[in-house]
Length: 53
Image 1 (cartoon, rainbow, N blue to C red):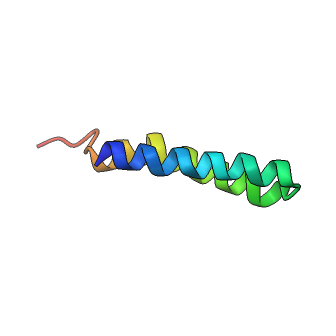
Image 2: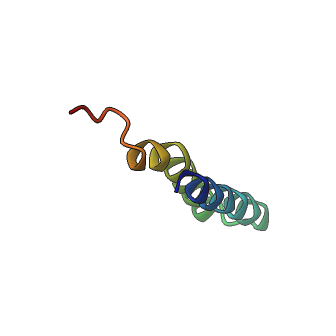
């Protein structure tokens, strides 16, 4: 599951960089931020970091 989230995050960041280069600054920044949230944030959420029993 973690590997899938990292792949999605990488695709979002690459799409954000391409969008920035094409001139759409706001959409590019949004895509990059989403990619960063999905990658490290998504992996830690789905792996149960901080989950205590």
